[in-house]
Structures are given as structure tokens and as C-alpha cells.
Length: 113
Image 1 (cartoon, rainbow, N blue to C red):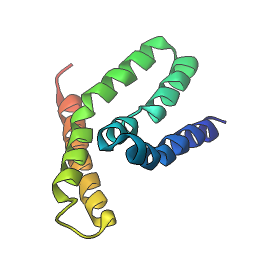
Image 2: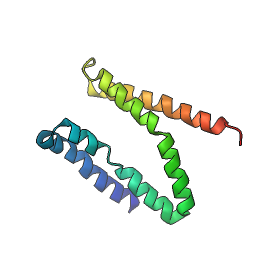
Image 3: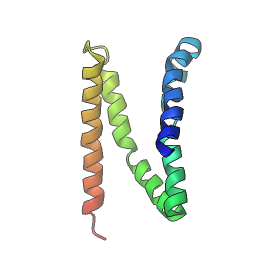
Image 4: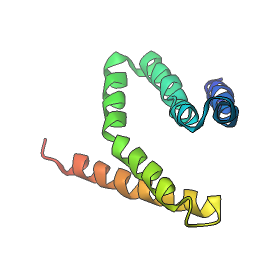
């Protein structure tokens, strides 16, 4: 059921982005694109299954991961008018996201406790 809810809500948001872009503009579509649908549903399930303390820790980890999302979006922005294939642009964006996310994870895991 968890997967179905995520897929349904996420699919509705994704399907709504082009509609919002055509009616309200690119800025509104960009903001809709960042609605934390998966995060919202995931944190609710973490809260119910593992408790509020774990949900708080997971949300902090998500906050620490925001630079990786910024790296993805910045890469797509920089390459979107330079490369012809959306799949190539998005692939470079995912690589940028992964490099930053793995770096953040490494820094956090290597810190002394």
C-alpha cells in the first residue's frame, strides 16, 4: 500500500508539472516539481514504524542532502541548452547528485563520534 500511495501522489504531481507550466509559468512549475511528495509519505511511514526520533533523524539527513539536489538542478540548468538529449542532461544531473550525495555521506560517516 505504501508504494501505491507514493506512486499515485507522485504521479499526480509529475503529471501536473506541464499543466502548471502552461497555465501559470515556469516558476510555478519549478516550485511544484519540488513538492516533497516522496519525502512526506516516507517520513510518515518512518514515524509510524520506527517512531518520532528516527523520523527526526531521517529528516535531518534529508536536510543535509539538499546540496545534492542543488547539484542535480544546477547541472540540468547548465546543460539543458547545450546538449540535445534530455536523457543525457538528466544522466549528467544524476551523476552530479550522486557525487555530492556520496561525498556528504562520506563526510558524515567519517566524523568522530
